[in-house]
Length: 262
Image 1: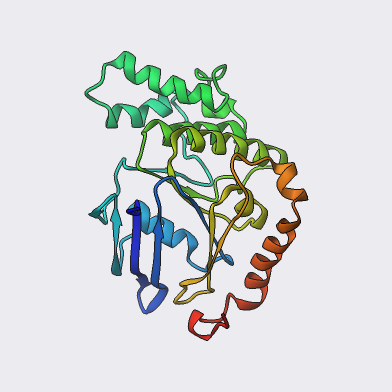
Image 2: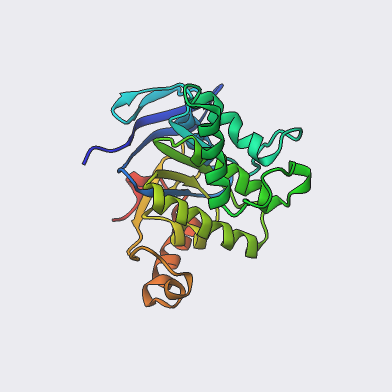
């Protein structure tokens, strides 16, 4: 199966400091992959290069068979803060992207597309409200709806639930998984939350500490989909998986892969 995303020898330097070096990763169609690692290790830098928002110093990226370095609507991005325009309603914020991508469609078709995704994320009742009238969790729902409404080839998530309380975070994880299942959308997510990575991912990619961060280990998550949080938490494999990730972060993340024991 041809990967949707291919990263080969991807490197990023800022001046004399190489933050990410020789980062290699392929992501299959419909796969949900999560990057974890210590703060400052370069996770968001990798995601930003994939999004085309940060230039690549060395190496390359192939998306859907085409080498690219520029940003584009073929990648929907959700950041930790959804960055909504405060003078626009939730509907208008979503339609901002829809209008740019689907400019040949009728206004009614564009409006219906925006409203569909707002309904799916649970904001059908709040489409005409402004960001200041919405909670942090509701604003993030708008950000998720905006990304999916572009119907991109790939979804990029940069700690999208990092600013939310635990209950809201769990609710939005379920919303995200529901949309992901409906769209079979290839996804790359950055998180520092081990439990979140286990619950959402098909594979978890562990990054070594910077500078010169790279792929240190990759763990396949064995739980079948669709997933139920309670069943995963009580599965005897869960603690082993969690311990594997924590051991890497606590003991191995500073060791170069060539020096790691198999």
